[in-house]
Amino acid sequence: MAPRTVAPPPDGHVRVRMTVAYDGVPFHGFATNPDVRTVQDDLHKALSKVLREPITVTCAGRTDRGVHARGQVVSFDAAADHFDAVALTRALNRMLAPEISVREVARAAPDFDARISCVARSYRYRVLNSAWLDPLVRDLVWHVREPLEIGAMQLAADQILGEHDFTSFSKKNKSKVNETFVRTVDRAQWRRVGDTVQLEITANAFTHQMVRSLVGMFVEIGRGRRRPDEMGAALRAMSRMAVPSPAPPQGLELTRALYRGDV
Image 1: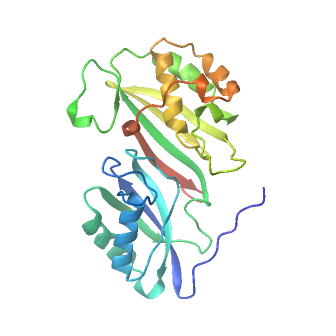
Image 2: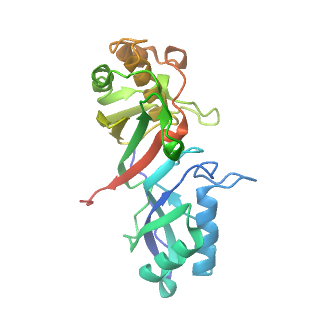
């Protein structure tokens, strides 16, 4: 596949890279969606007001309704004579708080695109594995009462490393023709932090609902309802019927988008 090209900014404009964090609960996902509140629409409105021209952003990874982000990256073009990274950060944080926070704003290369230039994305999924649900974190975790065997979950996670077809763990978009579900997973690590069991996962890209679908399978294995080796069988089946329902959205967080040259 030929590399995708990125158009440079219009004359008199600069390309901007911005890192944002947001609470996914009040939003119907990241992407613009008519008649409902989305992260992208809030960013468009705030940026357009501050920069005094219509602004459209592109993101590293579109998150679903209820999914959070700590390291979402967006890109957009701004008039060079109006661009001040410090002033823009302050103005946006006054307008977007408390649900959205701008963490960093910087001028980027003319060929930078938050989505196309991204070489990997990292997500974290949190499962509160305790007898009772802490109401203070209910919007940040999936509460699972049964004790989870993290060793079995890690054995299953090891089987998704490398390049695989994740059709079984993907929600298909009927409008996309010849959609591919092949992705390369670089890291899939479960660890226990107090009463919380957390998955850290990094891949070149993720299909729609891929992480949540994988977590649903991992938790079934951790509960002892499936064996670790059934993960490989589920991958080979290439059918949604081979896997349990996806984990709920509130436990998922986009932690980082990675680009060439990043430290």
